Length: 290
View 1 (cartoon, helix red, strand yellow):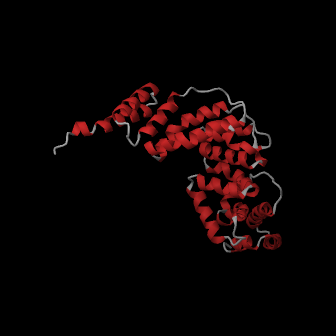
View 2 (view 1 turned 135 degrees about the vertical axis):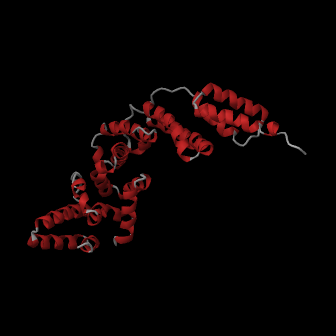
């Protein structure tokens, strides 16, 4: 049987009409093309996803969220329904880009909500990051009281500044986050596509003999100085925290590097002893480079 190419490509043509309208963010054209596809090919495998995205374009902007629960409900709808459909139709990078205006709409609606640790994902800063708006995210974080002492906004600010200005401005914040919340620090480092951060994270796992759990990452800022002493001025910008052993370890490394540059041998020996007593694994990593 000879196939009629035009007849058998009709579904492809109609499907592409919907995709093109979606890519152009033309809500009216997307809805019309989706209706044509549904009429002629009601069992098309992509139809449900195409209709989901067409409906997302048609949805009104909405009013400001009155409470975190309202924001959380809207976020679930975008994350559980719209985003997966978008990723299936457009793929990873293009799908994330297509969703950004929708995240921006939610960020604008969440602007008046204060920070609630029980609903942190509903805060505008988190939504601005998903929208790819680093400056707006940083501004939203800056309005949170004592944000440098709270893991979630501290991580948001790290990510926003990395997106906006690059890694060099983030070292102090990364150190503070590692001391305050090692697990959240780990999640952030894995999410940021920064080659240097990824390499240092892997080397730390391979070379630092700590307790063997996620809490070891609190020592990462200090350990970095054993591998990259040139980062001392940037890591030294970390604000004083709770004076935990990992923080004292990094401060000790900073002092050691300063004493080495000045050639103050007697004080250097004493500071090395203090570092050994504080954290033998960190001391071993330091001495391995001497």
